[in-house]
Length: 263
Image (cartoon, rainbow, N blue to C red):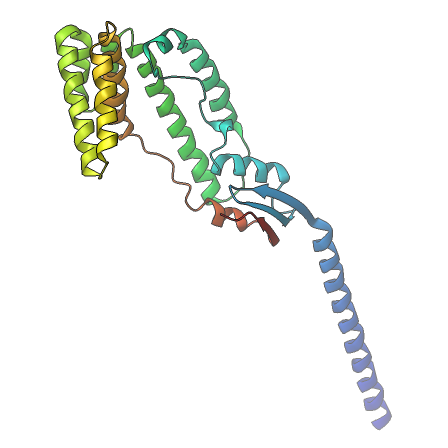
């Protein structure tokens, strides 16, 4: 009996050691697989260059790049076609077809792009889609408004825009009157934020030059649309907030190394 118990003890000890070796081997293989799945990834912001590692079984290189473009406000998902006039010579350069074509390309890219599969990134993508659709709608109206000012009175247009639209449609003295009032508001705003006398004098001088020009009605049209109608409408746009972009992006990496320039 004693011999049997001793033999049984040796058997269990042997099995225990074998099990420990197997567990160590499994952990070793797991670590080896994890290391094999790690990939190097680089990205930049205004000041720093980042070199990181990511697990390719959890997220793909394509997802990382697409999500970066989405969160970092790159041109990829933003309309770059000129949609506003800075002087009356710019009006003839505005092209609605070019705007629409760029929008169709970018909204398709945005709607089909594959981003990091998490609540934050999927929600950010959806918000970007809504924002891009809204911006295209308003950019288009802005462009058309130079020739057809009544189009600026879209459904849901802020009531504060009505005086600008009426003045643009009527033209003449009514347009000049609203233009002058708009300039006075600009000066008051500058004074309120503490602008110095040189700035105020410069703004008044530029306005007087345009007002005394033979093209004053064209200048008035541009300022009333851009500084009046657009500034009011712009405040109604729900801009996508990407303040947490860096924090959420970093969650996908390990061993992050930064090389930064001095600010």
